[in-house]
Image 1: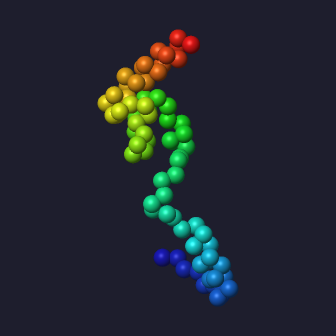
Image 2: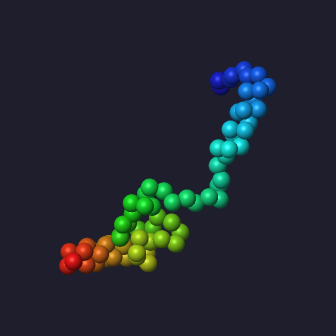
Image 3: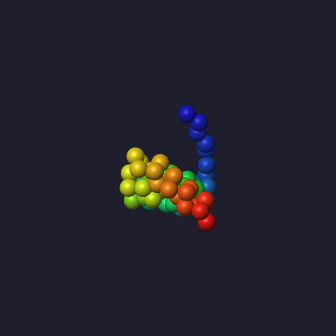
Length: 72
């Protein structure tokens, strides 16, 4: 295991940085995958099935979306 020797001042800076960058396990931010998911993408979050009520229904929802888009 690698180690680094630091003075007390540097240790305070590192401790503050660790606090600022600490992960929040309860956080559920929107990701790029969520933003890019279109109709029929399936479930990306607990309440989001990409317009379908289930992953099994997703292909039919996607086909319907494509047909609607082509009619425009």
